[in-house]
Image 1: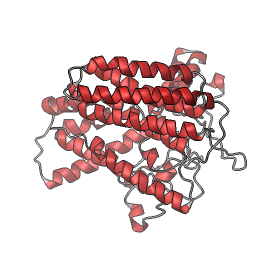
Image 2 (image 1 turned 60 degrees about the vertical axis):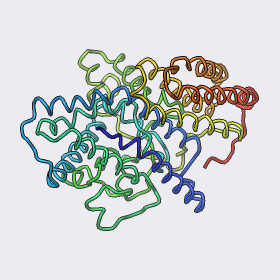
Image 3 (image 1 turned 180 degrees about the vertical axis):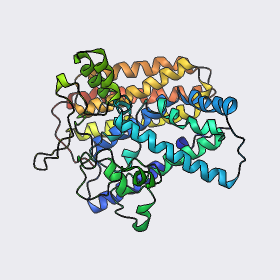
Image 4 (image 1 turned 90 degrees about the horizontal axis):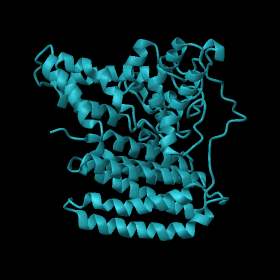
Length: 411
């Protein structure tokens, strides 16, 4: 049986985020902003939802090679687990490094780097499409003969390990800094400072960066985010904006060869006609300003409520998806993403959300018909109808306060 360790760890993630948030509030560190954190967590929810449509295919891709082309019969011993752990971490390093050095891969991975804050919610800010190609980098392990379930387990551990290093509250781990990927090393990785870009690609072990020349110690203050800020809380646009930029650049290229190069060259590469390679700019400390948006207390509580509803909806999908028809799963997934889209639009005070939110409410109620065969249908239907009635009434009184709202403290 294949266990989804990431999904099972979600409650622990939120407990740890809560602890860090309390510490941040107690120490007045201001590492958290409500709009940024909601954006980060929305990306995480979206990543898990879109991943539902590829989980089986990706697992069986590895499994097929293992069962048909494996070179060796490898016994299940402690040494096998240790060697596979090192192998998973090694191939993760190269997948991660290539995701920063090939535009088409960076277009997916960029989502993880968009936040201009650095806290535990950033760990959950994941691309909706990255896992669709990441698995290819690990296929040599299947060819060698490492069991698929062992691979899934250690791959999940590699991912889980990286959650806690997305923090500014831990400064240094002494001698462990020479071996492990630590918060200090990973802060560097998320920096938009030119000296920090494309450094410290490690998963668990920092030794790969030290061996292959991509290590950088944390020295000057780290400015987080990407060199051209996203400047949006829209979760869908966050996953598509760099693709749009690449497509626009390719359209302006003179010849077919340059059009292809746009997608396979490193970020910053442009055809000579468009100015050639453009290195990352130095940080202008005096002019540096994070993207932010104002919102009223009413919007704050409404967005928080809708986010919790979306989180519950996504959690149910993660544990019930195998019982749903593909069309039903797709519909429920779309509604959950629509809720996250509304949250972002409300935080940006987009006018179109006034119509979109009512459409979402109607679709949520009408779509209940698709779930009529579930054992929990009655409870589900009553819960959804109650929530959507509350949402409709609440939003009716809220909508006039969306535009020109006074800013509140964002923690």
